[in-house]
Structure formats: structure tokens, C-alpha cells
Length: 299
Image (cartoon, rainbow, N blue to C red):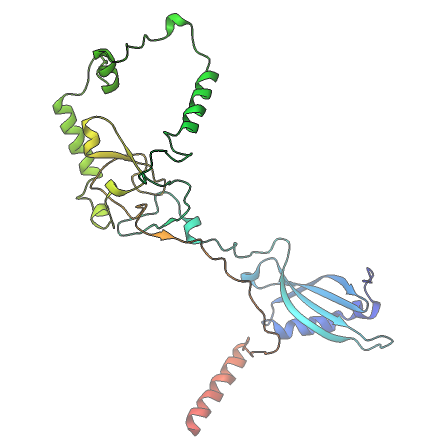
């Protein structure tokens, strides 16, 4: 059973532990003795503060031990470990999860996952739409339930719906029952303005793998402008929420590339059977360089 009280002889071997830490660290990088922790019967770990500015909050951990009925304390292991407030690298995150809206530029390609929740299968030839489609029966029932929960005003405040099949109903469907509508001149100026900012001649569209007319993130619009424009619904695209030309395009096209799930890296494997000597001091590096020159001279 693990002892909670550090072994006396092992706990007193502070100088032995400090010498081991200073041998492993660069000169002057071992600070004050922080604490001593019992790891087991006659096994104790001494912690020293690390003075290296690149390892803020880290500590040198030197484990010492002694055999049963022996008074000689021996060195077990020396390692640099992070403390509670240690400066550490953030957890690895795939690039697809690090991407934020606005990061895409001309020529960049943003693959979409095969099971992207923002996309669904298009028309397959069947008459029955998929359950999550906007025109499915399930979605229609949900919409009716939401409308029933909305507190409607008094009957006198409700607009009178035109009779189905009448000219007023057709004008209502086409959006012509307003006091004024866009003229031909207004439509052309709007089309020219939108095509200039998000059209086929922009650098983004010139470097795109495909146009918006085949993209699943394109939301169609009604009226005559719907024959040439739509609305982008890709939050990572440069035109999210903007009216785009059907000939426009970007690297976020839904069918440009389908990306599989990003693999997580395997945990690091430490090979404890082999030890690679690495020089930690300038004198060691100079000696290693001199040995290399001697080897070349003899060759």
C-alpha cells in the first residue's frame, strides 16, 4: 500500500536530487526546492522550480528510492513536468474545426464532410421528400404547430386573404399587391451592383472550382432576379448572407470536395529501451563538433 508519509532518508536527499536536476538541465535553470511527495514505500519525488523562461510554471521532478533495510539512497528518474500554472501548448484541433468565417480567400478550397448537417440529399426522382426537407409532411406539421402557438391579434387586425384562384391571389403570390414595386431600371441597377461585388468576374469566382448554380448552400430567390441570383448560406464562405450571381463561386462549394472525418493523432509512444544523447550545454556541442571534424579528417 502506498505510504502517505515520505521516507525520511529519501526526503533528506535534497542535494542528491538537485545534482541530478542540474545535470539534466541547462546551467542555472534549476530553482528552489518546491516540495517532496511520497510515491510509495521508500520512493520519494523532489520537485524543483524551473527557471527556464521557455518553461514557465514547469518543475523538475527527481525521484529517489532506497532498498529495504538499506541506508543508501539512489537516483531513480529525472524529468521535467508541468505544474498547475504551466504554460503548455493547446490541444490539437483539426484545421476544419479551427476555420472561422472570413478566413477563405481566392483560390482556397473548403471541403465539406459527407454527413454535413447543413446539406441534405437533393431530388432523387422519388415523389416523397426526405423527412428533414422543408416541404415534407413532418416539417409542415411542425410549422402548423408553431403557428398555432403564436398569439394572434384580434380578427379585425388580421389581413383579409384573397380568394384562392383570383387575380388578387396571383398578385399576392407574385408580390404585386404592394403600393409600389421595383421598376425595370431598379432591377437592372440592382443586378449590375450585385454582379459587380459577387459575380463571375471577381477574383474569388475566377479561382473557384465550380459556380454557385450547382452549390447546395445557394438559397434561391423569387422573381425575375431569381433567374440570375441567389443567396449564399455558407457561414464559412466570403459571401455568407449576400446575394450572389449564379455564375459566382468560391472554395466553399458544397460539391468541390467531400472530406472524411479528420483523424485524431495517436498518443505519443515513448521508447524507453533506447536513449539518444543530446547535448544540452555549449561545451558538449563544441566537443561533438570537434569529434565530427576529427572523423572527417581521418576519412
